[in-house]
Length: 103
Image 1 (cartoon, rainbow, N blue to C red):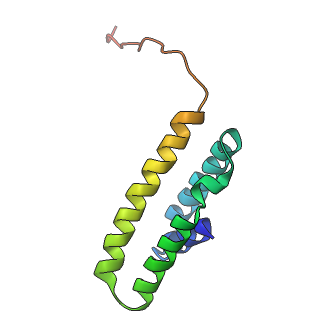
Image 2: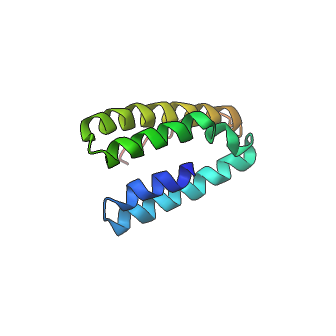
């Protein structure tokens, strides 16, 4: 449900390039979920209920309120996904940056 909601929002922009970019991001997120917990961590009722609220507001023509809710929703979901990525991404050793000296 949640992913379908996002896809509808992106497709509403009417840009083939942005839609393709979004689908690429979705594929990458699915890969992240395979190394982390069950995808339910980001499909909790909280998210679905929030999406339903935003959808209802849009259908009712309450665009400003829908926009505010969407902004809060996107910030919260970005924070939640970032936590999952940080927690489950493979540990990488720090390597010194190479500096280009122009020679």
